Image 1 (cartoon, rainbow, N blue to C red):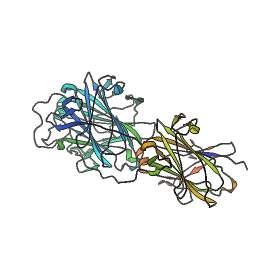
Image 2: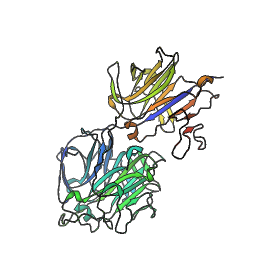
Image 3: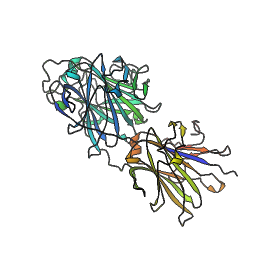
Image 4: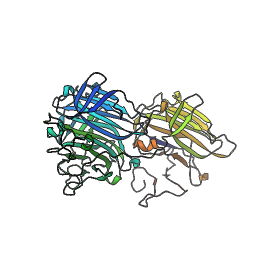
Length: 510
């Protein structure tokens, strides 16, 4: 019997972030901001990332329409943050959407990359867009970095504070949710009821205010158009939308605002159809402002067109879960966001090679530990710099000097013992990586096969990146098969289907 070698590759993503300073206060016409660079505006529109999780990076970009010059502020719950105006990194951003038409790239665009860096695991972050010199007009706010995951519960909530200038503009408030990264996510947007983020708001006719597939009147509230020919151009290229993306527009005409700003907030929830699909997505908010007459007045709560429900922000209370595995290396390096892979009951006398390749600049640190927690760390290994991969879920991953590699064996007194491979980010950096494992073989003595365990972490769940395992035969004599098991048998899903793969790409076998 020929001994064939299989290579197993696992992929995981998380994100890294940052933030800095400015000031905000409520004003009748809009939100007032004075930036640390001296710029100020009083006609700001506030969009809130509700309960943003610590450890993630989002990118917010404001694109002006028809010459509008946006200033963008990103603020934490204390009012501190960072302003941006005329950012060169945003100059290539553009959009072509049903309510905007073609919006060209411009040097007036503003952009901020930000994170939630408070002491809390979850906190609100506010994005405030105003006009330079209090200019009024229309803009598109693009938000990148989000994903729908199985851990999302109801989805991702975002709130918009309605201002008198938004009402005066006559421009409907329109939110677009576009899937990223290929087929997978089927976006759905809904307006949340004031009583609960998990309840969809309804209008006077008891119609739910939601949109699954834009342009389909049976699946999308109000006026919408198919997004088949729509696109948004960002730093990584042009994201083209399709018929499954979502668009939810609400007319603000005739809206009577409350004198209490918190009562003029609409909260949108981003999720997927029946929460059945996951993946990354991009948001685009199309907003208009114009000079308001008379300011805010009246005590009645806001209504949007026909809807009578007025959503407000509802705090979420996500569970507190460890982000990853902590490792302190013998060379002093340390990380706390590690992902652990276990070679279950490795046989004494065999040597394996583990190599971690970072994707998109991620710098992996690799630790190989025995059952006592002792072992060896590797970072920036010259012998790993030639490793590269081209896989369906990664695309081309080039070799680089950040790759890590360890050759290891099982040297305990036992014939069989577990060995753990832990991959983290240098300086707790987050991102995607490929772990390549060499040296294994399928033999007649294997019994059920070679088991490998992966400890799931909150960081993996939050990334929105599917955990993917590849088994590649090193000779034509081996026909690889991988299956998921909890008790020795092949696991089955909720539909009774076995979770296994024989020939990748064959739907009847994988």
